[in-house]
Image (cartoon, rainbow, N blue to C red; front, side, top):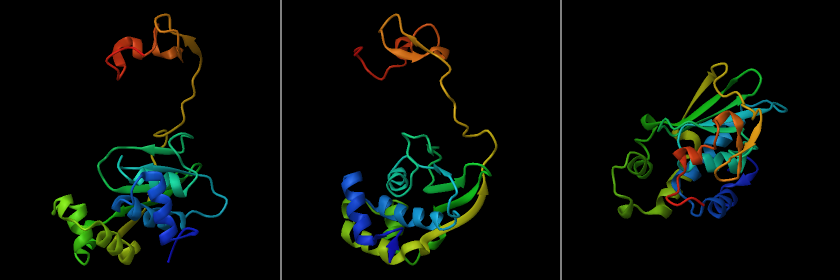
Length: 190
């Protein structure tokens, strides 16, 4: 069994080195990405949408050229364990999701995913084995078309130097940078 060009074991090792642990979500994410990539014709440039912030974005970044940094991966926090790979030009693609209706044959995955059993009572090794055994049988697949203009790339028009902090920022943000407007996550100004 392969996840793209990796054996399952190689992918789990790669995921663990990137993500920190071989979490169930990133393991399932490997099967999800593999399934979606098979529907992308060779030579097609594609973008990705991830509908959750946890685990799944890392699987997309490990297995595709789509990353948050290059702008080809957009995380839209809808709270659903789903991803879409779609053609940049036609906006047509494949959405793959963890399907709760298919989990009844997989009690470990169901207990983990639906939070029916506290994490401390779960056996992580057994859960990963069950995920590997289930493979893509626990996934739902939908053909989708992305709404026009929804994720179009926005380019900075011009850059200014903030008169308060002295750092560069997009001029369209105002007379001072967003951090100096009070939107900084820091208690003390760095």
